[in-house]
Image 1: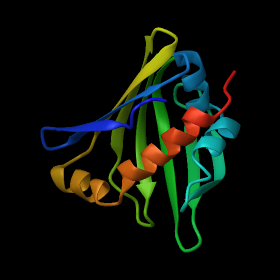
Image 2 (image 1 turned 45 degrees about the horizontal axis):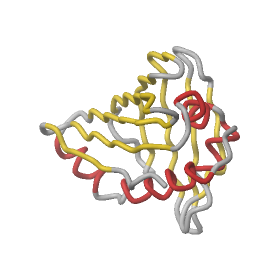
Image 3 (image 1 turned 30 degrees about the vertical axis):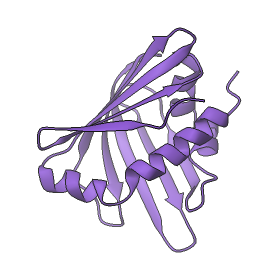
Length: 156
């Protein structure tokens, strides 16, 4: 079983999250880009489930993911700026909590590590305050819960 995610704050505006998965990059890529798969691993935790997921997995394509709990809903939207299947996703993202956050740039790298994947997610926020507020939402805990779901997902 892979170790929990790790993160590093770089400068005032970046957050870098790393995580390994016991699946090759092509399968981890699919789990991030196919709505049916994404809904499975980003749902099923104690608080939030994905209730809507639309992904146009093309350069210039957009996505919209709606997470909901008993008393709160938030939406993530964005545009894919560059896609290099199965190695790299560069996207611009806005979260609605419910008010929109400033756009942030997210680069996700999927690197083969034997038959596994080493994933590096670099989020570049517009300023230190936005990064601090994002960190205070508990986002990293939610990401790890979802990544554990991805570990358990049958991707073959």
